[in-house]
Every structure is written in structure tokens, then in C-alpha cells.
Amino acid sequence: MKAIPLERADIDYAQLATDIKHWGRELGFQQVGISDISLGEHPARMQAWIERGFHADMDFMADPKRIHPADLIPGTARVISVRMDYWPEDTRAPEILRDPTRAYISRYALGRDYHKTVRKRLQKFAERIGEAVGDFGYRAFVDSAPVMEKPFAEQAGLGWMGKHTVIINRSAGSYFFLGELFTDLPLPVDTPVSKHCGSCSACIDICPTQAIVAPYQLDARKCISWLTIEFEGMIPEELRRPIGNRVFGCDDCQLVCPWNRYARSSPESDFLPRGKLDRATLLELFQWSEAQYLRATEGMALRRALYPVFMRNIALGLGNAPHDPAIITALEAKLPEAGEVLAEQIRWSIAQQQARATHS
Image 1 (tube, one colour):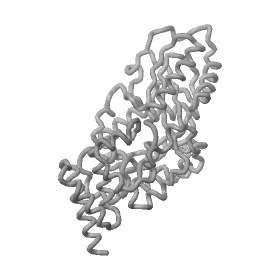
Image 2 (spheres, one colour; image 1 turned 120 degrees about the vertical axis):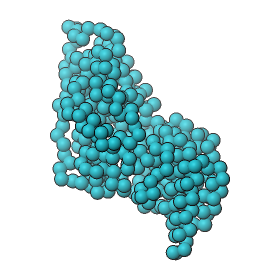
Image 3 (cartoon, one colour; image 1 turned 180 degrees about the horizontal axis):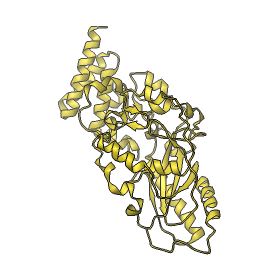
Image 4 (cartoon, helix red, strand yellow; image 1 turned 135 degrees about the vertical axis):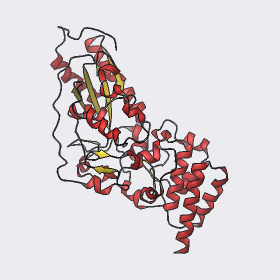
């Protein structure tokens, strides 16, 4: 960030803050808020979370710059947080989850990679601010650096941290992406909103693997999103059946949240489902070669899961599906070329299918 004077007499910062929120909405962000760079009790909570091992193998979470924004980008005075709705219309999420022959992909990952869409929009946002104030220091982030985006969003008034550790907005639910502009503009800050989870424990109760171990405490080692996206090893056997047909991420804690009755479909065409992946069967996807997988997921967040990981997840889903001789045939066909992790998962799934045949 370029070092320039923090105060400029020619700028009405209160009016600028109002204008910034207007420009953000014009550019397709559903809400814009502004916070300072103090993180309050959040660094201590994160440290306690890490000390309990709840971050799994995500060692990057312990980067000290995460809790010291001024060290990450020297000169930062404010964080402009934005939210962009992503929920595509007619996703039939509950219907897909109830059909064990279909592959459930977290709804945020069905369209274009949100990093690309939101970051491009943030760059336009910064350029629009620059047209008004001239040269200023800024840096855009979309889940792309050691940034505590949820605490900043909370402090900027975009919502509150739910018991499932996802930001909830009272009038829009939780199906939205977050992004930030770190800036040296000394803008007035917004007021955080109060929490409105009350005594509700729906997200805790619904979690298939009981990864939400207490309100506001998520054990990533048991979280289906981490297991099916980040983790490349063998999924613990005790978690395989609860995962069901979820092959990339999990939306259960949000699907059951009462506040999501107010969620709206995203107006962004980038987030519409591609390639009918919102209703594909497990068997269809298991037939994909790596080349097919790479073609089908080009430019998508789904690509974050490596091909062997995606195949492992689908094999697990096939093991949880109702008995079907075609499933056993497909699993056996993939076995000779499978690596150690995928092969172990295939063998487990074949055994599950065979046991289901015996008891049918």
C-alpha cells in the first residue's frame, strides 16, 4: 500500500463513506460496511481454537499477520467489507441430499469460482473510489490471504457470527461471500449488529459429523467441508456414513438456519450451476477421467478438490448408496488405477455394497 497522508482537508469522509456504500451496491455487492483494524477478542479466541487442534492441518491459520492487519498491509487504517449473495435459484438442495444416488455439491461451488468474480468486482470498486479521491492506498482480498474476514464483516455491521461460525444477516440469511478492501482512508466506521441466534441450536443439532462441538466452536477435523475439500488422506471410518452423498462441502448447518428463510437468490449469472452439477448422479461423476474432471470444472471453485480427492469422495458416496450391481462394477473398474487412498476407499465402498446386497 502506497504511503500517502492519512488526512486530506479536501475530502468529506462521512460523505465519502455514504458514497462508497452506494457505489458498492451499484457494482453488485448487496451490502458494504466499514470497520477499523482492531480485532478485539477474536485473536485470543483463534489462538485457543488452534491450541485445541481444531484447525486440523490448516497451519496457515496461525500466521501472525492474520491478527495484525497493519503488519499484513502497512498503512491500513480501515477495512471495507462487502457481501455478495451466491445462492442460485432452484438448487433443490434438500431434494438432492435425500437422494443417495445423487452427488451433493455445496451450492457456493456450482458456478464460477467466487474468488475471481468478487475480486474483479472489488478492483472495480477501488477504481471507482479512486475516481473520487485520487490516489489512495488499498489492497483487495477474497479469502486469499491471512485475513480474519468474518470478524471484520461482523464489526462492519454486515451480520453476526452464528453458532456455526458463519456470518448471518438478519434480512439476508448467510448465503453470501465476503470480500475486503484494506485501505488507508480514515473513514467513519459502522456499528456492529447484535447477535440473534438466541437459544436456537438447529445448526449444532443437524451437523452430520457433530463438528460444531459447542456454540461458535467448529472442529475442522470433523467438518465435511474440510474433509471433502482440503483433506487428501483417508477419511476416518466413523465419519464415512454420516457424510452420505456430500462430495464437495456441506450446507446442512445453513439449510436448517431459520434466518435463511430471508435469503434471496443471487442475481449473479456467474453463480448459476454449470454442467448440471446441481443434480448429477454419483455414478455419472465417477466415470470421469482426470481430463474430463479438469475440463468440466475449469474456472470453478470445485477445482479446489484435486481429482483423486474428488474421486475418493464420490467412491465414499457410492458406498453409502443403495445396493446396485452397477455401482460395484464401477468401483471395481476404477480400482486397478487407483492410488492408495482412493483404493482403500473403493474397497470399503465395495464391502458396504456387498453387505447391503446380502441383507436386502
